[in-house]
Length: 196
Image (tube, rainbow, N blue to C red; front, side, top):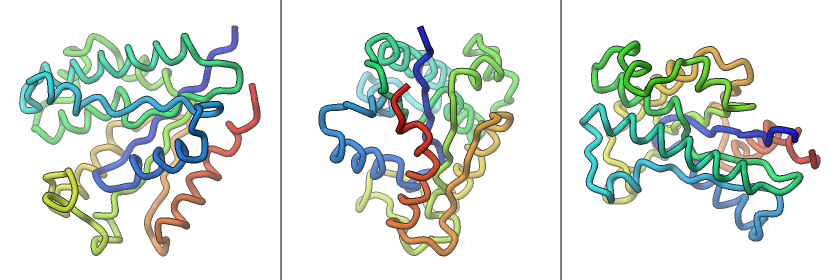
Protein backbone atom coordinates (compact mmCIF):
# COMPACT_ATOMS: atom_id res chain seq x y z
CA UNK A 1 0.00 0.00 0.00
CA UNK A 2 1.30 3.47 -0.92
CA UNK A 3 2.32 5.66 2.03
CA UNK A 4 0.00 8.62 2.56
CA UNK A 5 1.83 11.94 2.27
CA UNK A 6 2.33 13.80 5.53
CA UNK A 7 2.94 17.54 5.22
CA UNK A 8 4.21 19.60 8.14
CA UNK A 9 3.32 23.27 8.58
CA UNK A 10 5.95 25.01 10.67
CA UNK A 11 7.14 28.51 11.50
CA UNK A 12 7.13 30.95 14.38
CA UNK A 13 4.04 32.23 16.18
CA UNK A 14 1.52 34.16 14.06
CA UNK A 15 2.62 32.85 10.69
CA UNK A 16 -0.84 31.71 9.57
CA UNK A 17 -0.77 27.96 10.27
CA UNK A 18 -4.07 27.90 12.17
CA UNK A 19 -5.74 30.36 9.80
CA UNK A 20 -4.72 28.37 6.75
CA UNK A 21 -5.95 25.09 8.20
CA UNK A 22 -9.27 26.74 9.08
CA UNK A 23 -9.59 27.97 5.49
CA UNK A 24 -8.94 24.50 4.09
CA UNK A 25 -11.38 22.89 6.52
CA UNK A 26 -14.10 25.41 5.54
CA UNK A 27 -13.54 24.43 1.89
CA UNK A 28 -13.33 20.71 2.69
CA UNK A 29 -15.74 20.26 5.65
CA UNK A 30 -16.06 16.48 5.23
CA UNK A 31 -12.28 15.90 5.04
CA UNK A 32 -12.53 14.49 1.52
CA UNK A 33 -9.10 15.85 0.68
CA UNK A 34 -7.34 16.97 3.87
CA UNK A 35 -6.95 15.17 7.19
CA UNK A 36 -5.78 17.86 9.59
CA UNK A 37 -3.66 16.92 12.56
CA UNK A 38 -3.82 19.65 15.24
CA UNK A 39 -0.97 21.08 17.28
CA UNK A 40 -0.59 18.90 20.36
CA UNK A 41 1.19 21.19 22.84
CA UNK A 42 -2.11 22.78 24.01
CA UNK A 43 -3.45 19.32 24.90
CA UNK A 44 -0.40 18.65 27.05
CA UNK A 45 -0.77 22.03 28.76
CA UNK A 46 -4.33 20.98 29.62
CA UNK A 47 -2.96 17.72 31.02
CA UNK A 48 -0.78 19.73 33.40
CA UNK A 49 2.63 19.33 31.77
CA UNK A 50 4.92 22.36 31.79
CA UNK A 51 6.86 23.56 28.74
CA UNK A 52 9.95 24.44 30.80
CA UNK A 53 10.64 20.75 31.43
CA UNK A 54 12.51 18.54 28.95
CA UNK A 55 9.92 15.79 29.32
CA UNK A 56 7.31 18.17 27.87
CA UNK A 57 9.05 18.40 24.49
CA UNK A 58 9.55 14.62 24.47
CA UNK A 59 5.83 14.17 25.16
CA UNK A 60 4.99 16.55 22.29
CA UNK A 61 7.04 14.45 19.86
CA UNK A 62 5.47 11.16 21.01
CA UNK A 63 1.90 12.49 20.86
CA UNK A 64 2.42 14.10 17.45
CA UNK A 65 3.74 10.86 16.00
CA UNK A 66 0.85 8.88 17.52
CA UNK A 67 -1.71 11.26 15.99
CA UNK A 68 -0.02 11.18 12.60
CA UNK A 69 0.14 7.39 12.60
CA UNK A 70 -3.55 7.18 13.53
CA UNK A 71 -4.48 9.47 10.64
CA UNK A 72 -2.32 7.50 8.19
CA UNK A 73 -4.08 4.27 9.23
CA UNK A 74 -7.57 5.66 8.56
CA UNK A 75 -6.82 7.88 5.55
CA UNK A 76 -8.89 7.20 2.45
CA UNK A 77 -7.48 7.18 -1.10
CA UNK A 78 -6.59 10.71 -2.17
CA UNK A 79 -6.44 12.15 1.35
CA UNK A 80 -3.38 14.07 2.44
CA UNK A 81 -2.36 14.46 6.09
CA UNK A 82 -1.65 18.13 6.87
CA UNK A 83 -0.10 18.77 10.27
CA UNK A 84 0.05 21.86 12.43
CA UNK A 85 3.60 21.73 13.81
CA UNK A 86 5.39 18.40 13.87
CA UNK A 87 8.15 16.29 15.33
CA UNK A 88 11.01 18.77 14.89
CA UNK A 89 9.19 21.88 16.08
CA UNK A 90 9.79 20.81 19.70
CA UNK A 91 13.51 21.06 18.91
CA UNK A 92 13.05 24.81 18.25
CA UNK A 93 11.50 25.25 21.70
CA UNK A 94 14.22 23.04 23.20
CA UNK A 95 16.90 25.28 21.70
CA UNK A 96 15.08 28.39 22.92
CA UNK A 97 15.43 27.01 26.45
CA UNK A 98 19.20 26.88 25.97
CA UNK A 99 19.47 23.09 25.90
CA UNK A 100 21.88 21.25 23.59
CA UNK A 101 20.55 19.86 20.30
CA UNK A 102 22.21 16.48 20.78
CA UNK A 103 20.35 16.07 24.08
CA UNK A 104 17.03 16.52 22.28
CA UNK A 105 17.59 13.50 20.06
CA UNK A 106 18.83 11.47 23.03
CA UNK A 107 15.72 12.48 25.01
CA UNK A 108 13.23 11.52 22.27
CA UNK A 109 15.16 8.40 21.26
CA UNK A 110 15.08 9.23 17.54
CA UNK A 111 17.56 10.73 15.11
CA UNK A 112 17.08 13.90 13.06
CA UNK A 113 17.02 11.79 9.88
CA UNK A 114 14.34 9.50 11.30
CA UNK A 115 12.11 12.45 12.17
CA UNK A 116 12.73 14.30 8.88
CA UNK A 117 11.87 11.19 6.86
CA UNK A 118 8.31 11.13 8.23
CA UNK A 119 7.33 14.16 6.12
CA UNK A 120 6.90 14.38 2.37
CA UNK A 121 7.11 18.17 2.53
CA UNK A 122 7.70 20.85 5.15
CA UNK A 123 6.14 24.27 4.58
CA UNK A 124 7.48 27.08 6.74
CA UNK A 125 5.04 29.96 7.15
CA UNK A 126 7.18 32.87 8.23
CA UNK A 127 5.91 34.59 11.38
CA UNK A 128 4.60 38.10 10.77
CA UNK A 129 7.12 39.16 13.42
CA UNK A 130 9.59 38.98 10.51
CA UNK A 131 8.91 41.72 7.98
CA UNK A 132 5.25 42.38 8.86
CA UNK A 133 5.55 43.31 12.52
CA UNK A 134 2.54 45.63 12.44
CA UNK A 135 0.30 42.57 12.02
CA UNK A 136 1.70 40.65 14.99
CA UNK A 137 -0.81 40.00 17.79
CA UNK A 138 -0.16 38.62 21.25
CA UNK A 139 -2.06 38.19 24.49
CA UNK A 140 -4.73 39.45 25.16
CA UNK A 141 -5.57 39.91 21.45
CA UNK A 142 -4.32 36.43 20.57
CA UNK A 143 -3.35 33.28 22.45
CA UNK A 144 0.40 33.74 22.26
CA UNK A 145 2.66 35.17 24.96
CA UNK A 146 5.74 35.96 22.81
CA UNK A 147 6.75 39.55 22.10
CA UNK A 148 7.67 40.41 18.49
CA UNK A 149 11.40 39.82 19.06
CA UNK A 150 10.72 36.45 20.71
CA UNK A 151 8.40 35.39 17.89
CA UNK A 152 11.02 36.32 15.28
CA UNK A 153 13.59 34.25 17.18
CA UNK A 154 11.20 31.27 17.30
CA UNK A 155 10.76 31.57 13.55
CA UNK A 156 14.55 31.41 13.12
CA UNK A 157 14.78 28.41 15.44
CA UNK A 158 12.08 26.59 13.43
CA UNK A 159 14.33 27.02 10.39
CA UNK A 160 17.25 25.57 12.36
CA UNK A 161 15.12 22.66 13.61
CA UNK A 162 14.02 21.61 10.12
CA UNK A 163 17.48 21.96 8.53
CA UNK A 164 18.19 19.06 6.23
CA UNK A 165 14.68 18.38 4.91
CA UNK A 166 14.95 18.02 1.13
CA UNK A 167 11.46 19.36 0.43
CA UNK A 168 11.31 22.37 2.74
CA UNK A 169 9.61 25.47 1.33
CA UNK A 170 9.50 28.87 3.04
CA UNK A 171 6.54 31.17 2.50
CA UNK A 172 7.80 34.64 3.41
CA UNK A 173 5.85 37.79 4.28
CA UNK A 174 7.85 40.17 2.11
CA UNK A 175 5.43 42.30 0.09
CA UNK A 176 2.48 39.98 0.75
CA UNK A 177 -0.79 40.36 2.57
CA UNK A 178 -2.57 37.28 3.97
CA UNK A 179 -4.48 36.58 0.73
CA UNK A 180 -1.24 36.56 -1.28
CA UNK A 181 0.54 34.44 1.33
CA UNK A 182 -2.34 31.95 1.31
CA UNK A 183 -2.17 31.76 -2.50
CA UNK A 184 1.56 31.00 -2.37
CA UNK A 185 0.91 28.34 0.24
CA UNK A 186 -1.79 26.74 -1.90
CA UNK A 187 0.63 26.67 -4.83
CA UNK A 188 3.17 24.88 -2.62
CA UNK A 189 0.59 22.18 -1.87
CA UNK A 190 -1.03 22.02 -5.31
CA UNK A 191 0.89 18.91 -6.41
CA UNK A 192 -0.86 17.00 -3.61
CA UNK A 193 -4.30 17.88 -4.94
CA UNK A 194 -4.41 15.09 -7.49
CA UNK A 195 -5.70 11.84 -6.03
CA UNK A 196 -3.00 9.25 -5.31
